[in-house]
Length: 539
Image (cartoon, rainbow, N blue to C red; front, side, top):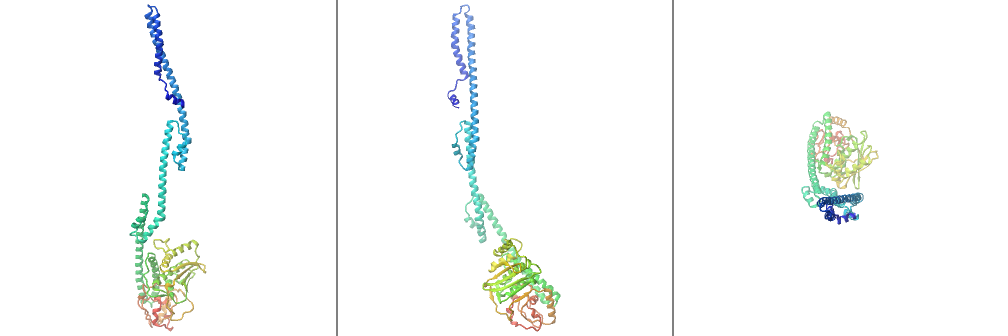
């Protein structure tokens, strides 16, 4: 390479120049010789010698110049071939070094996040101009790609952090602001949100818009469900009033009376479903009580709202009553618990309900003889009871325990699960003292414990019809359980002017009197004071 550079510094004359020099040199030698020969030749031969000698001298000079020119061309060709060979070898060596050393070093540096120009400075610069330009071009491209890659990595990491913040912070904040004040939620959130990349901002606005639209749809669905439930409650109340009128009118006909009782009970069950729908939709039951309701009546009222009321066994002592504003909620929650126990136990087993007064309130235990539940199912039930749900957050199609959870949260009830001694599940509902009051002793002394059992509707009805055909009815102590649904308000059911006849006041269902006061149907029993009807349960 050094010789090559020295040749470039001291270039040789071209073949033409060398041929010209050779021609001049040959002419300088041959012309004097030709002149001397002509001058020394005899006079007669001098012209011929001059002519032929001049031609020969000229041809000789030309031959020398041509020979020198060809020699120079050949030498230049050899030198050029040598230079080309050396350059090719150098190019091959430099290219191999770039491929085997420089490019792997650049790739390793990029993977480690190092600057490629630093790597280029750590290696010898290529001596071949083309390889040198190639290495610098590759380094520049790699540096640009590295810079763009670093920028893209930073952008991706920033967007990833912003998306994580959107999921962990912004979404809960959106839900909170929407629940607090949906009309002003978007304006409030726009002040609270931090600045993010445009793509994340579009995503956040889209999510907020979808949440607002979903909340509007949820409110519309909840209002529609609550309105439908309220309309259904109103229709059922009207239907019950009509049924009670028919029971009063056809109470002396056992066949008609039996059918009316069955219809009354089915309407009561439908009313419980309507009440559950209204509760889950955020409404409240249409029934409201203006005075305390005895615990015994609460239990019997809940029992009368389920299908398998004949399997329920009530065990109750005491004179505690539930305040009027909470009576319907407690009754509805107990009905759902009883219905759940009856549905998930064998049809030939009983469901036992115990009510016990304690210092912390009244605990009501509902036990069944079912197969029990697994730990996963228990956690699911406990979550329904501990976390109030509505129609938009129900985890499934079963609504009974969700209704219990909402009622428990609304009235401060405490509901817990425990294994039952009968092999199934026990549900304990604690009614706090704030919802309890004492109505005083009954007109007649009650035994230490009364057990109320569900009775067959048809057999009981036929017995009632036979008794009614033979004479009047008298008041007596309450016994037994009755199926049925309570009125919308206790004031629509006036007191019963029982006499020697069989008539009932309007709005008072004969079926309820049969199950609640069966002793009134037997003449000769000890009458109860007529003026005590105000303390009797309002069913």
